[in-house]
Length: 162
Image 1 (spheres, one colour):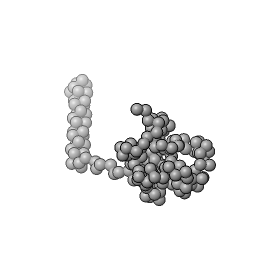
Image 2 (cartoon, one colour; image 1 turned 135 degrees about the vertical axis):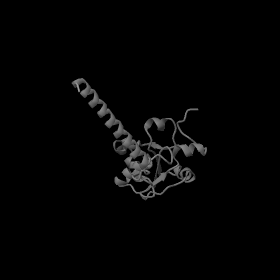
Image 3 (cartoon, helix red, strand yellow; image 1 turned 90 degrees about the vertical axis):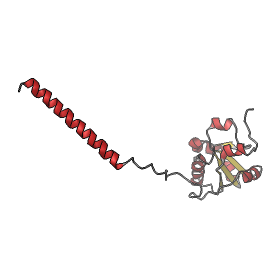
Image 4 (cartoon, one colour; image 1 turned 135 degrees about the horizontal axis):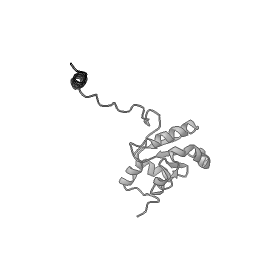
């Protein structure tokens, strides 16, 4: 057998081994089935787990006009300026510790602090409320429906352009 034929046979043998290995791996994977769907994220915060009372839009509407209530919008400042619950203060969750000093006195005087963000699936209000709780505030309420529900229910919006 010439050296050229030897290399050719070796290459064919290696290709055959690789093809068989790939086929066996594919069959083994197919027999195992598809991997299970990922579990829902369990590290998500929930208002109930954090012991923050959840309130509905109707109560937000009643409380927001009380002089001792502060409403906080946890969304980004650009979202706040495009429309927010009337009287709400912007306190973006990502910047809350920087902006807290400018409103600390108002929060300390508040009977209720209502925190909201976009909707039920937005966790920013919970992160902000937890940060405020860690800073010593205990009179926190969460409006989980957020600006989306507020708008959908026809309540007034401040700062919204027609």
